Length: 566
Ligand SMILES: [Zn+2]
Image (cartoon, rainbow, N blue to C red; front, side, top):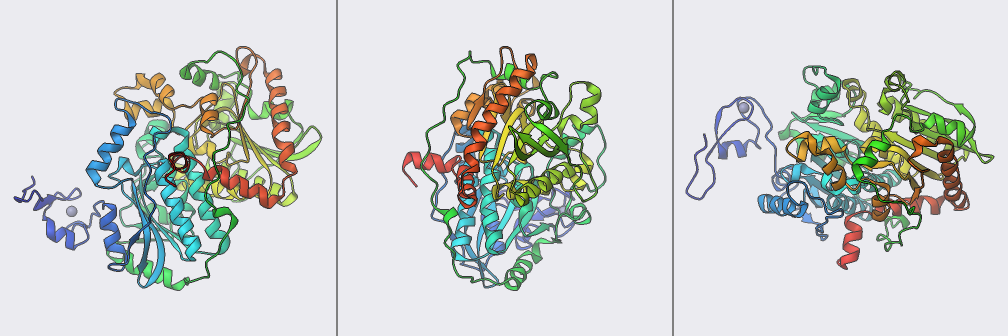
């Protein structure tokens, strides 16, 4: 029951927690926290900014969000229609509001997400705006504050939305390098690609009371594991107990707490001009290397990519590489069987190889957790990549995963933060990295091994922000739409090559890799040598700069360059 004033504004609203009927103005005075039960209602970004910053201090960044529809996505509605509706409903151009402000007298750069806008999803424009906010913090020498509220990546932008996790992360890495503080405030809800990147890779992570955060959502976890979830799963208190946030702060204390943190860590460092923050380079010509074979349907490609006889990482380590010595463990108490890695040689050169491991039989698949890495798997991969950099060895990663492990324990052990740390560290790893997507490149779990100088993809592999089944379940009525979703997501190697997410397609033998693993192994070796050898000549500083530019150029940056509005 709601009563409406003649102006159209509701006078009363019912609390979603305790069902108490509350006078709207009183609720507003109480910062939209129910005085009866303490429920923290969701806030729109402008209201959140009003509550957090010193009055009158907020200045919007001059950059405007660019309308982006990079893959021409259509489900039951074309994506531009959904965008237009979100703009009309919220009065915002995108799912984030960015600017500079003062909090308790300390200057900062600030980005506040708005869940009302397409579930706060991380599209190219959102990634671009947050990246520019981070760059503003760097240029002005002030801390960065991020307030997150998001269901995850924006499916309608396919793998380009996934790339935003890397784009924002490397901007965060630059702030980390120069010692500027980053703070994230998790608000309800923060999930998926946002949780697994900047929400958890900040120096300090605060959770607002009542916020829930996780890599996988409760519905997905219940579906996958068939288990009931523990009481309070993924709530702020759960996150605190499992070591994933620094503190839980009720809404009325948030501004004062931020003010204390910003003041304590100091501001007003000299502005630093760094080479990595130049405007994105002009769009480079798409590389050649698209094999001239008949174009297959995307859904058929998905089935080939998942074929049980398709070569696995351990198969490639036997065939493409020589002298593999496996290394185990994350040094924090776990050794995940879904990730294998160690020292190997390629044509006589020493390197570090890390990859997802599936299997050919059901027993093997089960033993390897179907190639779904736990946090321990992501941390093992990171340990090996850091070791490689210390030893001066290049890194090759082989990606073949339906996605990161969406289980209860994975959440308890910090899945989101583990993925976020890999993405951030890989973006500045001081050694060459070449990735080959050999089978399934599933979402954040794939990207956690794929922030590379060169990203190659086998002809019948797929790389996607979400599985076609998952996408269909959310955007279409009924699960039978997975083949349509597969087409809409642009997840095949030729598609991703055109979008610049992938640099080169590695041809597969007639049929597919499953029909001739030896020929596939030779093709992978040839492609790796062709891409890795030139990187060995590049000075480390240049290499890291180029890698940053590679992940800086995605999505909105490219679209605005094309439209000449940058
Ligand atoms: Zn209530």
